[in-house]
Length: 538
Image (tube, rainbow, N blue to C red; front, side):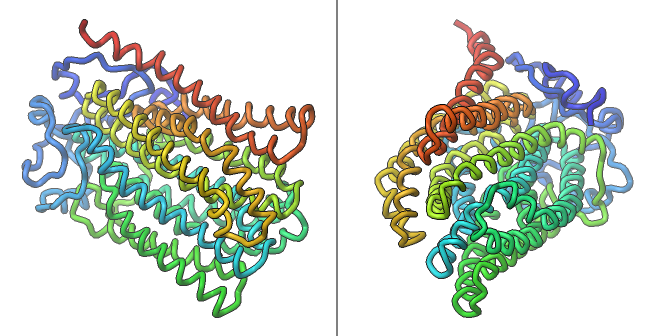
């Protein structure tokens, strides 16, 4: 959707400010990046009075912003008017003021704990099938992760677009546009989740054959994937809803939901497998039922809250200018994540030729690797929200400092987590299985790759900061170059010219991480780092 208002139309445009923001003098030179998150003509032209300060959860703005009239809402947005003037106790977090690192930690910690519990969905499946079903079932669950990630990461990319747009509206004090963005986001989510679920179920056999899945693994993998995709809408709706909450700084309540549903998933896994003897189908049923509960909880929260991001059923619709802005930021991220996941399907196909023991070891490595990855991902999400709110408020200098702080946090935490996993690689792999061949392969992959995750932590924080500025094309190009092009070239050449061994194949991940790390650091320095240096007086 590229036209004169598309975020892709002009690469070097700033995030457009409101008329009041344009009139208010600022002490900084805004860094220019993507096409602005523009406002509708009605917003720019139609004045109305602000709600009383005590009745709004939006952060205080500049004097010019406080005095500027807001746009008259269209008649259809009576849901917004109904709850707009009610007294509300907000759970949103204003990240445009106060100490940076404590705010980062306070926001990222619930995200980290939530991500850990979300990871438990699939990890518990792996534990149960590895210990109570079979090695083939363990290989099936592990190998199908690459397939399920294609849909999940695509949707997560779109949710980043929604998070940035909503966060920018929140930082810019634009309550009306925030409400419209919530409506558009959830309408898009409900529609796409059903469509993608149906398509995925239909193409399960073709996807498994494409991955060169061994014959002894295909039956179990087919069963698991068809059940999982039939109920994946719950996960997609939850992820998008929690993205809305993150945009306004609320990372705590999604954590509560994940703790509850993760415990439910563990209980259902054990019940379906040990009591009902449903095998791999049981863990799939447990996962989708738990995800359905989490989706229900987040939708109930959004519809019943009295806060500014309330979801109103009769206001649900697609607002095309807002959709263009969401897709302009989210679609490049979604495409990059989807193609990266698709590329990892090729990596999995290289691993599959070494047999089910190596596949299972690779699966264990990927599960344990995620516990090192999650802290950096949480800090990266915090950076996205922090930067989007501060650029929306016109505080580019603070956004740059937040990026630096996020890098320090991510690198420190990743190093500590990587060291712990390196030391405990053998015992940690042994949690999933007692098969010594599987443990040997899992330990090999972990110790070979885990410290390269330091480069990956830089990748994700820099990408999060760039997306928070509305620039999603740069990280997309960098990641596609490293994670897809360079990684696949390496695997193709190395397995033919050096050796086709598990070690050579396993190094395909670090090759991509290091490439992207270098590209993103160079890009950020050239487009933002130097501008910040020149803006600081001698």
